[in-house]
Image (cartoon, rainbow, N blue to C red; front, side, top):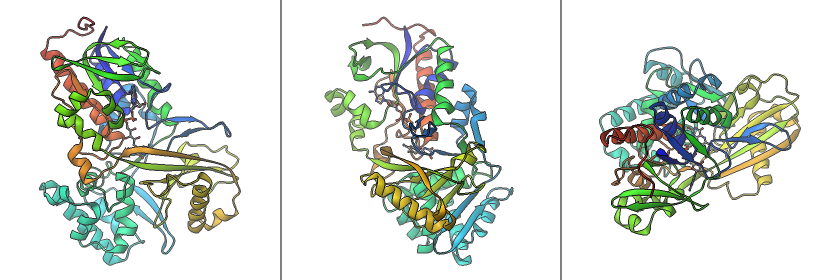
Length: 462
Ligand SMILES: Cc1cc2nc3c(=O)[nH]c(=O)nc-3n(C[C@H](O)[C@H](O)[C@H](O)COP(=O)(O)OP(=O)(O)OC[C@H]3O[C@@H](n4cnc5c(N)ncnc54)[C@H](O)[C@@H]3O)c2cc1C
């Protein structure tokens, strides 16, 4: 019998399940796919036999909830963590530049990093720094203009030039918010600046997985749950959430089972949860009915195997002013020195204008971007390519979304929500997903304790 039923086996569901299992709760996690990992998973590419991610994921030193989760399941040593923030950028007009933060106290580390960024004029470097500090102050003071403006809208307010947007603000905003700065929320960008770039030198570091994403966390999390008496069921598709007497009464599965528990956690995306809710609930609970209005922003990933290494020892580089935003050097990240050739994973974020195009056309444009920025790549022979299109990659971080993101708690005492899209105040990222899972677990723990439900004891099944 279950203390807690959790639907969704991505970062949010697994974070909730492991936190509850660590507290002695008996959890059952239900995942509709044959594998765990949701939108952050890896698989074996048939042509190369290589494990590749559905898309390169970059984490940051400020992902404190994610570190807590990975520590809990014993997976932190699978991460490669930069000693200090260093981001190399390539600009077709101005060449190469880097934001390199020395080990100075906050905010001097960022000050030094921006002042040394040669893709901007000296005047623009000063403008970016002043703008960043003003944005920080606006966030700390709770300035209401942040919630009312888009990223571009607030950059207007901060007097940022076209060049400063092109080589600094837009790359930062698109990478962290996964959408066009013309529609993305300024408040979310300000949150990223507060947490990541102006929270000390360690918070700003990039963190990458040395192993495939599934290996990073799904197997260890599953083992953690199962060794504590919990269960993880894959191919377990929840097709309905039952409500009775002001509470959730069961999760209904596609195979006909009705599972019951003392508490229920939804850790599925909004477009997954909405159809599971009875129409009467959608109509009577605005926080749940409203989730239908949340839209998504796509990411396109282009994996390319060359006959030679391309970026030397650099783990990743950012592209300025091109359709392709980043190139990740998978060989360097994985510490692989034995390869005959080179493997790069390219990222196109906020890819609305790309996602419906033909794969060959996308590959051709990505390679053209690379050859423009890294002329030596023109001589390299492409051995194999793989395009992964994630249409529903993340919740679109628009001003409308900010108003529709629901809280962890619902009006139903035994039903809580998790997922990167719930109202964590963060963009839809791994950190948001894990934070939401931990919050859901904490609410469930407190409520089960308040109801006096002993660990491992479920209410009678209906
Ligand atoms: C290509 C790509 C690149 C990204 N890059 C980054 C990055 O660089 N940094 C970063 O921090 N974040 C990144 N993200 C975002 C990150 O992957 C997500 O924020 C995170 O994985 C979301 O986790 P989640 O648990 O909230 O949701 P999900 O991962 O979507 O998990 C939900 C799970 O619920 C399951 N499910 C759905 N419906 C049902 C049902 N009815 N019954 C049972 N199970 C169900 C799904 O199959 C899924 O496994 C990226 C995302 C993508 C797609």
